[in-house]
Length: 272
Image (cartoon, rainbow, N blue to C red):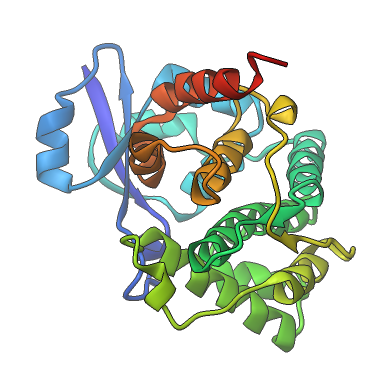
């Protein structure tokens, strides 16, 4: 049994704020380590086997480049980090990731007509547009994963960066929400969403307030479909409190969320 603990993200870079998470990664080989003991020792930890890391490499994961650039070795067997050393996705892989993320944003169409729906929109756009920023930078050989540094490297104006920072604020509020979001003094609607999309994608994308889920169009296995099911739950089209709890801790529930998606989509398309 061998494992390596790596800290990454804003706490590793030194640009954390009060809302930042402490991102701890465990890469393990051969026999799984004692997950419970490591979580007790290091707090929240996301676990990846070496085999998973290799699959991610083959798919051109920008996350692995992020780990290589920003990751700080904390403990364990440092030799396992050789799986990350110098990794950069190919230009083709970067273009493919950009196109798939851009396609999701372009077909998002609507967000739930409520305060929590606005925060959900911020969260989803934050994740998607940040991915696109990373891809545009990577295509130029720039690997900066601090949010503000990445936005500046991508050439956004001061006003556009302010909108993207507002997007991040909404993301923080969403992830810390407890169900009483109507009391939150925060607004982020269609107009600001359009400006955020244009800042990164250089194209006009309209995202309306309110809509209905087209269940037949949902894939049953990808991350973006999970977010669209989440949207349907917020808008009152489906009820599943357990799913909402799982998606708040996505890295711990990746496998079960896939089966949940298949089940939920099946419930809404079985009569089609």
